[in-house]
Length: 278
Image (cartoon, rainbow, N blue to C red):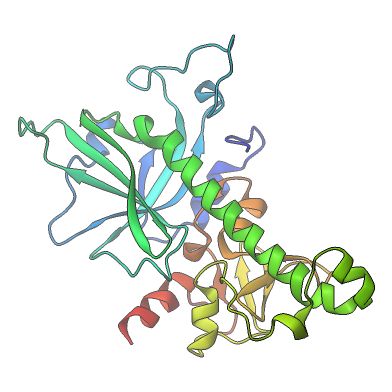
């Protein structure tokens, strides 16, 4: 898993962030929030990119020790949007949220920082730091990146397996697909299939349609049956909202806040919010 990209046009990506995005890195210490605003649940992470100094998320024997985020900038980019309430985890699978809590000593210059991820239909705490100062974005950057990339990769794997076990297997001779252990679409049509992310729910609700296009930073993708995205000429090449946006941007991102429905320029994140209010 790549954590940083030396050729990433970070400034160009920042220009594509929604206007309500909160920039935590790069930022001055005075601009870093130490408490979650009133009537706000947490900060949904849109983009994270670590610095070269941060190194790899996994260190082997003999590797240099991890840098101390208290003195070394590990986040080249960290941005998010405030959420007023916990959104339904089932349609927000893959999202990562940061919550700020009052520390035990009630020090206004410090915060307990909690990182949660939407997985398996619930919000789970995946990491927590106690009494951190305004350097907290650099404390959490690597953990946020790892969980966002892991969940994006898992969703992509689900989408690719569904394509392999469905349309691709159906196009193969029976003797070949069965030899590979693939059922093919007719054989599995009645079996429940895990959707890679919430895009399938938007399809089922009629908020998007199979075959329509979504746009991000000059790129176009087509929504496919089952809640996948097609990008490129191959009908069998599939991706997902977060995985494709991450691939195209060269930065770990939440694509729901970047992809827009072509016909009206609405963010997929807004459509997902509309779905939750129905």
